[in-house]
Every structure is written in structure tokens, then in C-alpha cells.
Length: 179
Image (cartoon, rainbow, N blue to C red):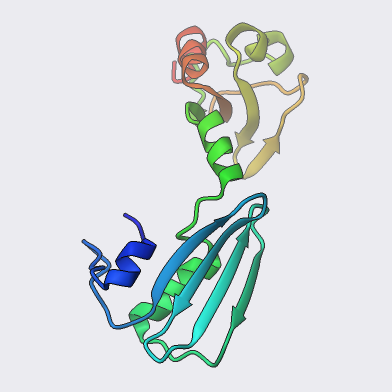
């Protein structure tokens, strides 16, 4: 659901967002794409004060105000979300999200009957056979991040793997960690 309104809606005064953002007498927020830089959001309060937030592609913000701002609670939440980035999806983040859309991070408890039990990570060759990476081995209160090939998998351990959906499926089929 968009938080921002178009220039046409702003000029016509017809903006009444649906759902959780009821029409309010608070600030009107407009958005302009700044090529190669990011997006600029401008907020004009009913009293005429202007707040400008330049959201750079690297995630940093530049905030300027023409005068002290007086905002009701709903307007303050809208402006706060804008400054915090909650209402903004950066192009670089869009690309990362698209590239990782079917990547899964899953963890499995290791049962006694699992083919993993008693073998070293190196001997199991999990990445070579399924494509997933084991990113952690959890034993009791201790977590081994990026465990090396010498780590032995024991009953009661939990393993954390990272891979595409098809790779996780291949791992589950081949190694049946739950037994």
C-alpha cells in the first residue's frame, strides 16, 4: 500500500489513502526520483512548513526543514517511517531481493538415525552433493559458525543450511537429518 501520493493527487486534493492510512489533516508527502542519487521526499504541513528527506541509494538520509514542524501522532509516524526507511525500497535492495527470492535459510535437528550422525562435514561433502552451504552447527549452547570440514555431526546437534529451494530439497532428500 503506497504511503506517498502523486503530484496530481496533491494538486487536486483528492488523496484519501485506503486501509490503515486514513485521510488526515497532516502533511502531504510527494516523491521525486533523483537519477543516480536516490529519491527525494517532500512533506508540506498544513501550516506550510516544509520537510525534505533525500534518501540516497546507499541508504543514508539528508533531512532539512524550513521551520520547526508541528505534527500530530499519525503524521509523525508517517514522517518517522520515511526517515527510518520503512516506507522506502531502494533500487539496490530491490536487486538483492530479486536475486535472493528463492534462497532459504533452514535448520534441522539431527536424529540418531540420520545419515549425518557421526560423520565430519568434510566427509559428508554436503555442498558438493546438494549445493547447500552449512552455515552453522549448533551443539547445546554453543554455535559453530561456518563450521570447518573437521567438525563431526552428532545426534542432538542442529545444523543450519543456506541454499536455493531446490538445493534445500536435495539436501533433505539425501541426508534426512530428522532420521
